[in-house]
Amino acid sequence: MTIVCSGCAEESELVVENLEDVEREACECGYSFVVLSVAEFEPVEIAGAEVIELRQREHKRLAA
Image: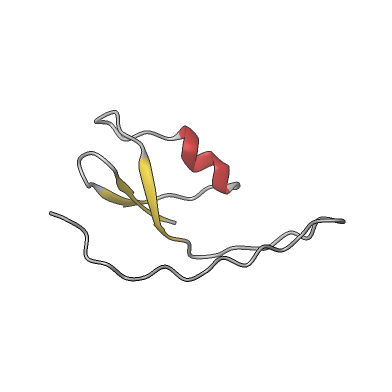
């Protein structure tokens, strides 16, 4: 996956077995990472689970 630091904006690539592993990583500056893209993903089906459809976000310009 491609990640970016939420503090210094350093972008890098990271290989993890579990997406939750990203939450345990931290940049050298001490801030956490934000996931920009995932190169490969294998969905897992869970018996009795419910699919929740997320609505599409409006594209708004972020403040500088």
